[in-house]
Image (cartoon, rainbow, N blue to C red; front, side, top):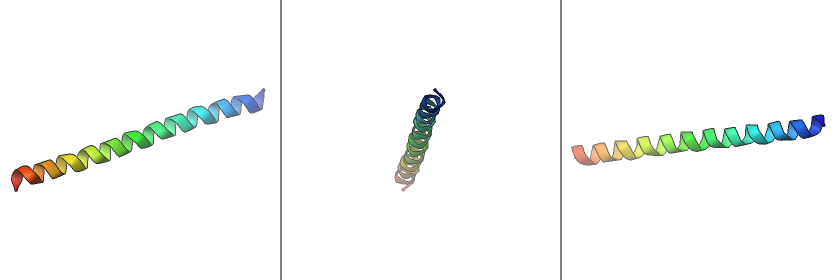
Length: 43
């Protein structure tokens, strides 16, 4: 029982971690694209 609970917890934690990483990557790329667009408009 305890082992199964740990597996479930690890799975949820992995999903949250993956979501956080994807969110950070998305944020990073959107900022990069915004900077490129601003520089392109300014240039």
